[in-house]
Amino acid sequence: MTAMASGKLALVAGEGLLPVEILKGLIEKGEPPLVYALRQDPSELEMPGISVIHIKELNLVKIFASLTFRRVKRLLLAGYVPKKTIYSDSMDEETSGIVGGLRDRDDHALLGAVIDRVEKLGISVARYDSVVPEMISKMGHIAGPPPMESDLDDVEYGRSILGKLLPLSFGQSLVVSKRAVVAVEAMEGTDQAVMRAGAISRSGVVVKGMRPDQDRRYDIPVVGLDTLRSMSKAGLSCLALEAGNCLILGGSSFSQLSCDLGISVIGVGPCPSS
Image (cartoon, rainbow, N blue to C red; front, side):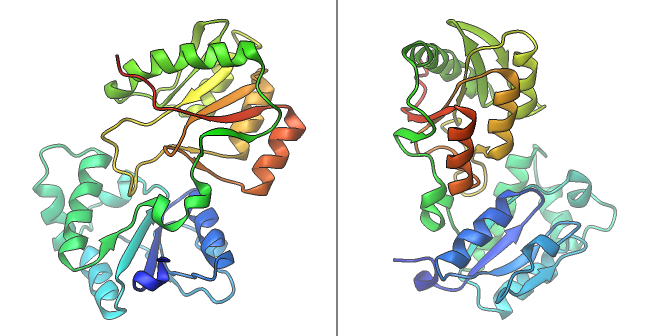
């Protein structure tokens, strides 16, 4: 059953490339969604046949009313929303009520509360793998040349370490070279962690995974062309992604670039937690 067959689909598009890539993929599949652009510049989302509603300030009352009026049945969330947008002084009553009722005010808690409210309207929030399964990392070889044995050894070592780090919630990836951890991702993100690693060791692999309790409707790791470029600059040769737990941006361009740069991209099993 396709997304459109399950009811009218809307895409809430925050900042970044992810919503743009998802929109292109849905158009190619003949499933153009209604787009709510929660970003400063919505021009990248203005594509033929696409209706874009530009949300200049977060007002959940108006957004929920619009979703109901337009008979949206499925909602997909993509991209990030700056916290200054969420916690601005001009919050509407609905947003204030949601924020005020939270014990923790991190992104995970806030989005979870908003999703609960959306689903009470009879709108289901879709998982990425149900709408754009072609963008999800698969098991085995994904792109680029076959990995070297030394890289595979580093990947397995990295998986054993990352499995223990993921539950701590401060990073989703690490860089390993010769069975030694060179860098661990923190708030700076994967690409910056990769560049830090490159300043220390000009060889190694990146292993990227996802916490078991992450919500697959809005919180899934992402890699793309910039990840490959950063790895190339840092001298890294293999990108290992937990199968089913990462979104890959770029489509055929990602595959071509991994070949051009000589970077192996593979899907691996879940990182063991013990």
